[in-house]
Image (cartoon, rainbow, N blue to C red):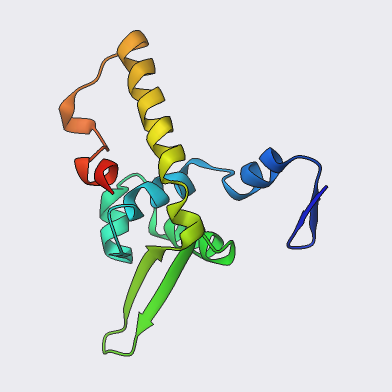
Length: 125
């Protein structure tokens, strides 16, 4: 059995699925692999997400110790998001998911360069 945050899981994959139960969290992590970002930057990078949803997902990832939220005492306040060590360990998983997606679309669909989310920066870190 696995126990975390007062929840019981019979399988470790269920722990993972409980944390990443939607498409936005992995997308946020993918973009944070490039380095720390402000809310506005993430909102622009993930253009399909609403500000409300982004706020909720950032809070959930922070509560799960996947990302850090650092507030700087400035006027106006500056808030920066970055990955924790646990978040950084997701890089090889996301790289594999990216590669699988490219291969899948290459076989069953079409890829155009104007809508690719991938950057060389993500792969070199």
